[in-house]
Image (tube, rainbow, N blue to C red; front, side, top):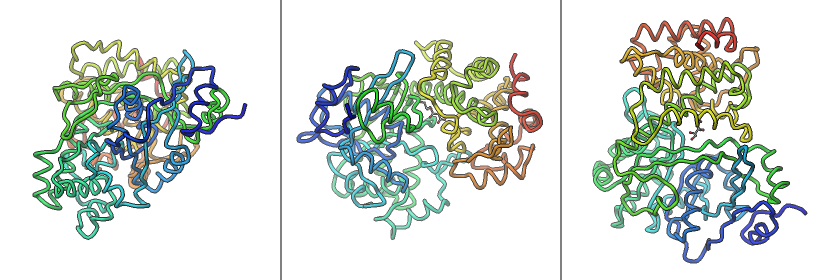
Length: 501
Ligand code: CS2
């Protein structure tokens, strides 16, 4: 039978036709449903994580927190068109050795594309039904200076948005948040909670600090109101979500009989630990497996474990893996030497720097990570891991190196990963094949990586990325320089055994 197009009208038929037990929304999607969450940055991760938790809530009868998706960037037009063409429904395909399971998700109710109508986005955020504005805007969307920990206020986008003449046409997330909050303030409404779902240590606190700094440049009164009344919960978010490939669409059509123009593939695992701090109410997240935690310190511990172990290991798979010519994460894990390298970096270099979390066995956590990385069915792409590295390596790898410097701990493998990133930035792999670098700082990084050759200095001198503690440490500079020379001379795979015991 021909696959059925994913639409509200076809849902009963999709559910009935299938032999593999597809879960579809059985809750109402109109009428009494309110859009309590506005989400900026609807990509694969949002659609496999927050939107899935909200879908579960809606199955539990929660009707006030459906999602209005927002795209701020021109490239979001693709998501707008895909979602609008299928009543904002989409399929999540969970894959593992146990098989494939498909869920149709109905928690996204509408979608606004800011380049079409910026005012509509501001009005939506300012609407009394909106209680939460959530974000997956990637690290670079925060305009956060890693060295000073301040807002990059000189950045042309921020300069544009703080100019009152541009208030109705913001470019950055902060411009939209500010305009909407100012409107709520003048209407006597509470500020919405700004809920970051990005991979950053202290993501909520950073969002708060960046938005308050932005607001101070516009109107100190508003900055004060946001500081006093606003809420910015910190959170650890986790679910590996590869980019959707054309094969995924074809498999969904063949195996499940669904025609979906943009499904999401992910793993069975999902975790979300969030601080219980909301300014205008929240849904009962704990009903659907979210760990809602009172103490911000506890959230920070979970964030630290996840960013340093999961994302840090991903970096160790990504940059050297790309140089060595691997295409997928699980292929790297199939190589015994490389696998050992990742395990030893976790065990010998990262784990000793991490605090205990009561109830969490860190060795089990590491073992689970290796299993998740080894899942061959999700086909997680190395170039995805390498994307936007200037916002990732300074979060995932460099803080472990800095802490190892303070305690004179081992860090050769971490330095090898940083060296591989520097080499990667030259844009040519170990076989001389060029590849594309996708990073908001690409031009500067690539020019410096090429000028520096096997010396790290051109790159280390970028003050917004690397702190003085790194630049000033002789042992670090020597170790990374040696690794850069080895990789340039012998390539990753010949060098790697030197870093494995
Ligand atoms: C990855 C993450 O992009 C990356 O660097 O490490 O997207 C990772 O897959 C997620 O954080 C998993 O939760």
